[in-house]
Figure 1 (tube, rainbow, N blue to C red):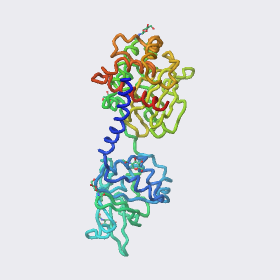
Figure 2 (figure 1 turned 30 degrees about the vertical axis):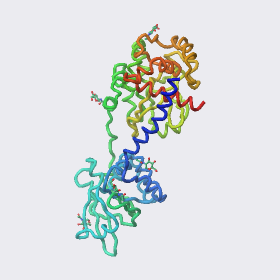
Figure 3 (figure 1 turned 90 degrees about the horizontal axis):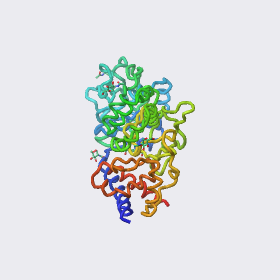
Figure 4 (figure 1 turned 45 degrees about the vertical axis):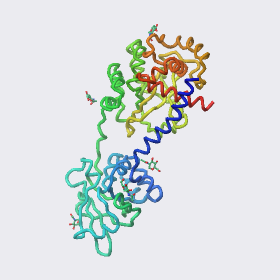
Length: 414
Ligand SMILES: *[C@@H]1O[C@H](CO)[C@@H](O)[C@H](O)[C@H]1NC(C)=O
Ligand SMILES: *[C@@H]1O[C@H](CO)[C@@H](O)[C@H](O)[C@H]1NC(C)=O
Ligand SMILES: *[C@@H]1O[C@H](CO)[C@@H](O)[C@H](O)[C@H]1NC(C)=O
Ligand SMILES: *[C@@H]1O[C@H](CO)[C@@H](O)[C@H](O)[C@H]1NC(C)=O
Ligand SMILES: *[C@@H]1O[C@H](CO)[C@@H](O)[C@H](O)[C@H]1NC(C)=O
């Protein structure tokens, strides 16, 4: 009974916590939302999101975005630039200053240059990140990239939306051409170890390195990679069982935590079904099932169901997520017969019988803090055994809390 009330409490608190988190990150503007009202700019809007420029634009206080319509974007796309070059080109269309329609027609001496977000990235050589704005006869305003040989190749069409002096969105006749921005760029160099180290996944990074799995992850970085990291507190409880594996199985377990393709959160939410992992190799299936569970994305093996608990990085070609349990492939661990069934509402009598069947699979929890729960049933039992201890201040806290939430969710659903 006591456990139910704690679980209910967690379920009540969670939405409040989430609300607090979202209300503290108020943005002055949302470019995606503003442009969504104008379908003629949908391609431009799509690429602002795909290149992550949208987030950058929303973060800035004073900004001007020069949009082009879908026909203008079609011209740009016909150049078949990589997404990184498209990002450079579009960032040239974002001025780090405010230009409303009125200001455009009142430029001192009729001509000016303005810095863009391309310049702000530091990757634009020389003056390439600047745009020339010139007030022309008959009320025309011309725009040209500074590295475009003095050619003003695009013109002001209309003001789309102005929120002085936060954001001005103006339409120009075509994309600005810039040899530097359109030049091929090497994909940003990614160091998986560094990324993991910074995000509470250092132990997992160490495990990949020591098992020899890291090389395979790195080899897949360029072509696309999705990594699922059990954070340090989750992994530490699993280490006794990990050390028990042979060297080859340790490597397979590490490889099991990666997909050889990039999967954004959106893609994961859209793709229910079987996925191969980096450990998949001919007869060795080492696959798992992605399944959406409300807003959550779960990864199911026959042995365990893990839930994605956070995004560390999600930028093509690399996505790194945190998960709440170590992924146990059925090739290395005995399957739990009940793992597919929803965790039942906690009952102390049932918990006793489960303890018996559970201990066949799991190491006897002699040191309860170190006992790792390989499936929902055992997790359930671990929670009821030492939930109070874990909640007050052990490293089990987050795990126990997430188990409580999971249990509560399935409890509410039944
Ligand atoms: C402009 O941004 C500031 C700071 O975020 C905000 O307080 C203000 O309300 C915004 N102005 C408008 C008109 O939205
Ligand atoms: C901006 O608006 C889009 C579309 O309405 C929404 O999906 C996105 O979450 C919003 N971004 C922020 C930072 O609020
Ligand atoms: C902008 O370009 C025009 C046309 O090439 C040129 O006459 C003008 O001097 C340039 N303005 C600045 C500030 O460089
Ligand atoms: C990543 O960074 C670590 C140190 O931060 C370094 O030891 C390692 O060689 C780097 N890996 C690659 C592939 O560059
Ligand atoms: C290690 O493996 C042995 C033999 O399979 C088993 O008896 C023992 O319980 C395992 N220990 C852990 C911590 O998994």
